[in-house]
Amino acid sequence: MTDRLPHEKGFHISWDQIHRDSRALAWRLDGHGPDDGNWRAVVAITRGGMAPAMIVARELDIRTVDTISVKSYDNQTQSEARVLKAPDAALMGDGTGILIVDDLVDSGKTLELVRALYPRAHFATVYAKPKGRPQVQTFITEVSQDTWIFFPWDMALQYVEPYRGKD
Image (cartoon, rainbow, N blue to C red):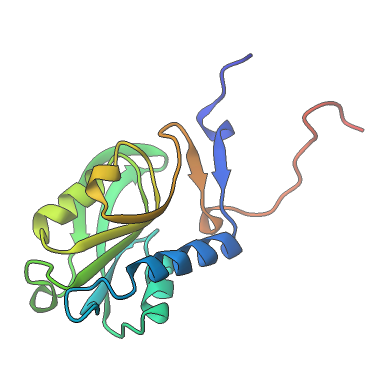
């Protein structure tokens, strides 16, 4: 057996799949907020968390939605996580009643940084890898650490040659 390139052990997510999995995340979170089961707001970690956060906010009828912009990748290479844009400080406080949503927890560095800012927030991701799992309280699907997830907003449809032959 030959070694695979990182992109060859891929988990391809369609728009339908991210929608279904984000709705499942909402169902799992429903009734678990600190205010009689409700959440005060949803904060999406940009950019990947925006689509799941929008779906969660819609499903749970949460009207207050904000973003936190954290950069932790340069293309497909992880770098030191840093906040580029923070959510409204008056809204956030220590994070109590805030649901922070991202598409994926990988190494956990992004969520570790955000958790230090808002220690009482609830952290939820659609997908989780083992290294990052301690940073997230709620998720839907776990994938192996060496799997690269291809999200629909990163992909375009194109022809792929067959594995064997050209016929």
